[in-house]
Amino acid sequence: MTDAPKSAAADHSITAPLKHSVFRRIWLASLLSNLGLLIQGVGAAWAMTQMTSSADKVALVQTALMLPIMLISMPAGAIADMHDRRVVAMVALAISLVGATALTVLAWLNLVTPNLLLVFCFIVGTGMALMGPAWQSSVSEQVPAETLPAAVALNGISYNIARSFGPAIGGIVVATAGAVAAFAANALLYLPLLVVLFLWKRVSEPSRLPRERLNRAMVSGVRYITNSPSIKIVLLRTLVTGIIGGSVSALMPLIARDLLQGGAQMYGIMLGAFGMGAVIGALNIGEVRKRLSGEAAIRACTLSMAGAIVAIALSTEPVLTAAALVVAGAVWMLAVALFNIGVQLSAPRWVAGRSLAAFQAAIAGGIAVGSWGWGHLTDYAGVEIALLVSAGLMALSPLLGIWLRMPPVGARNEDAAELLADPEVQLQLTGRSGPLVVEIEYRVAQESARAFHNVMQEVQLSRQRNGAYGWSIARDIADPELWTERYHCPTWLDYLRQRNRATQSERELHQRAIAFHLGPEPIRVRRMLERPFGSVRWKEETPDRAANEVLPVVATAAGSST
Image 1 (cartoon, rainbow, N blue to C red):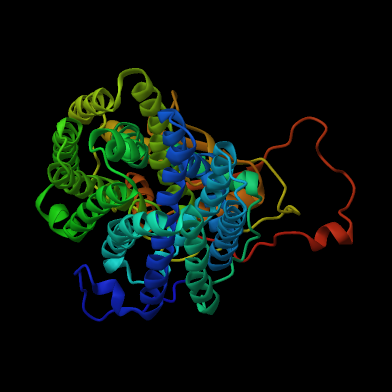
Image 2: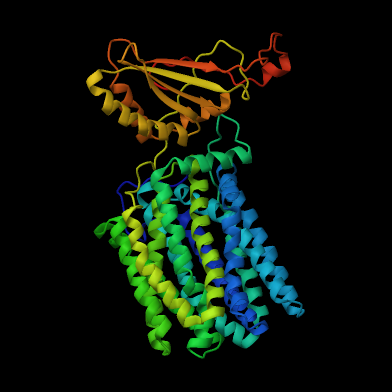
C-alpha cells in the first residue's frame, strides 16, 4: 500500500514530486549520499593511478563498483519485493557504510594496496546493489502515479548533480588532503539518508498469502521478465548501450592524465562536466518524451553520444573536451532515464523490485564488462583508439532498432482492480499441495477461430508472466467450436498468487478471450490436483496438518476468474 498523497490535479512538471514531503526528504538525503559516493570514486580512481600505471587496473575500479549490481541484483530485487523496502534500504546502506569506514581506516594507516582497494570498492558496490531495487521501487510509494516519470528523472538528477559537483570537490579534497579524506567524506555522507529512512513511517498492506521463498521469488522475477517482450527489449538495449557507452566513465582518469596532461583537479573537472550534462539531460526528459517516440529518442541519443566521444578522443584542449563531455553526459542520462522509465512503467508492483533489479543488472553489467574491455583495449592500442572504437560502435547501435524496436511503455503499470475470492474446494489442501492443473473450455464460432487464437497467444504470456507453466491451447477435432486452455501451477499457494497477480489490463485481456465464448452457459473452468502414482494419501489429515491449510473463502462465478 502506498502512502503517497493523491493529487487533485495532475502536475507533470519535473518538480512535482518534490511537493511530497517523504520523497523530498529522501531525495535531498540521497543527494548527499550520491555526493559522498562520487567523492570516494574520485579518490579511489586517483589512488589507483598513483599505485599503478596499468590502464587495466584503473578501469577495474569502475568494474569493482558496478560488478556487484550485476551479480546480486536479482536476489536484491526479490528481497525488495518480499520485505519492507525501507528496512532493506537501511541494511544496504549500513553495508556500504561499513565498507567505506574500513577503507578510510586502512588508507589512514597506509595499508591500502591496488587489490585491497578493489575489494573495498566491491563491498561498497555490494551495499549499493542491494539498496538500488528497494530504493527505486519504493518511489511509487512516495509519489502519485502521474508524477512517477518525473520522480525517476529527479533521482537521476540527484546522482548527476552530485556528479557535477562531487568530482570537482573530490579532486580538491584529494589534492589537498589525500584519498583518505575522500573515503571519510563518503562514510559521513551516508548518515543523513540512514536517518531519513529510519524516520519514514512507511505504511504497507500485509499480504493475505505467505511470502515466497527467496529462490522461488527469484524464479518468479525471471519468469515475468522472460514472458514480457517489452521489458526484454528494453533490457537488451540497455545492456548494449552500457557496454559501448561505459568507455567514457571507465577511461575518464586516463583522458585527464594522458590526453589532457592534467592531474586530480582536471579529472574532477571533466567528471563534473559530464555530470552537468547529465543534469541538463534529466531536466529535459519530459520534453523529449513528449516530442519523440522511444525509438527515435534512443536513436538521437546514441548518435549524439557517438559524435561527442569522437570529440573527446581527438581533443587535447580541456575546454573542447569539457564541452563534448557535457553533450555526452546529457544524452547518456536521457538514454538511461528512458530505459529506466520504460521498465518502471511496464512492471506491476508485485514484481517492481525484481524488474528494476534486472534493469540495474543490465546497465551495471554492461558498464562493468565494457570497462574491463575498454581497459584491455587501451593497454593494447591507447586511449584515443579505444574511444574511437567506442564511438564507431555507438554510431552503429541504432541498427538494433530494426530487430529490437523500443516499445511503448506503461501498458501494465497498474495493480489488479480487486483481489479475487478463492475458488471453492472439496479436497483438503495445504499451501504445498500441487501441482495444480487448470482447464478452461471456450466455445468459439469457427469464423472467429483465428482471432481467438491470436488473443490466446497474449493470454499465454500473461499466464506465464504471473506463475503458470506448461500452457497449451487445443481444439476438439470432433467439435471444432470447442477450445481448451490448459496450464499448470506448482502448488496451491502458487495458483492463488498467479490468479491475483494479473493487472487491470491483463484482466481486460482475459475478458477479451471470454468474449469469444458462445451460448448462454459460461465458460467451464476445472481446477485439478495432479496426482502422480503413489502420491495419494489414504489416511485422514492430522489436526496439525489441517492447521496449516490455506482455506477457501467463497466460490466464484464461473468465468469471472481462472
